[in-house]
Image (cartoon, rainbow, N blue to C red):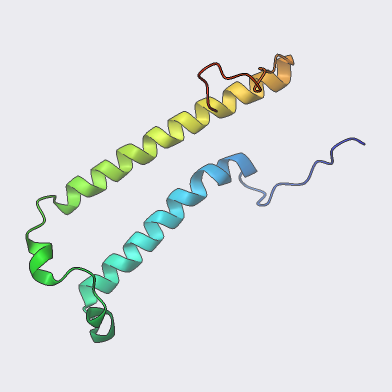
Length: 108
């Protein structure tokens, strides 16, 4: 039986691109939400804070440094995933699929 081809989840972006970008979008949305909650200092959330305010002031890493590090990490992940996607697409076009049953040092 031949595999069925489904329509993409969204019409303006491929499912592969969506799978690549959606975790990054969700990460930044949650990060911004929790940062906003932290800045608002809601009493209920302050009661359950993991790190108190004094401990946060001792933090040696600045917010811009954290943002830069996250962006670099996510850029490397996107680069690696894009490379892997092109390799798999090329293998499917040429029919030269690797033998993934043997361990030759490639874990992707």
